[in-house]
Length: 327
Image (tube, rainbow, N blue to C red):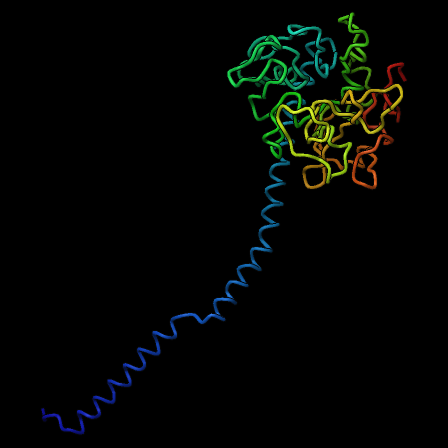
């Protein structure tokens, strides 16, 4: 092996410098320029703008499916209730006589003025309240009075309105005018119900008569930009869910009829599921419906009018408004 000459050493030094520069260049190329980073960020933002609406729609479809399953379960309770009560349909809500009456036995104990939901759910074995209160003057462990308790099971609450748990300001409403208006004509007569009991055999076509559905409450009487957020125990007519358990039909006789709110504000179905409202029909089946297909009249400002069609709501299957004096 010959000793290295000056020429060899110079060649080796040159090669080392080239390798060093190459390594340095490689390290530089492994980073990103500002423009490259901005391009990547723009691509990610574009992908998110495409994916997020799809994910949101998928989530809403999932909520609609769960909600419809709840209604179908409760629909079984409606059928079972009528079977157990000589074909009578469930009342909308038992009237108030005093702080202790009316009461009814629901799953879990005696309950002061239970709604149709609590009575239907009892028949399918789903307890409506953790601790049913037998008196208006009593409060449960959550501090709720006997007539404003919160539902215990999520079956009683629409999955898209999970905080609407109050039995009065609920997410599901009943076609009370035609099927179970248990308000009193005469406050001195505890049995002077306005339109109850009703029996299934009085319904011309149970498969085309609304029983229960997603309810907006009395906020329906206001344009969308004037509707206020849901409040559990509130009584403000503009709040979403107010009087939600009373579901008014599309056509209301303002002179001799009935309306959810005693101050004259109507309720309506709520198309909260991608533009559709989930409906449970008297025969027990469920479906998703547009408000217009249910007969509702939409005003130019977005509020719900009083002059729709009651074909899918009345017991007769005709477009007639329920009135105190009868059809």
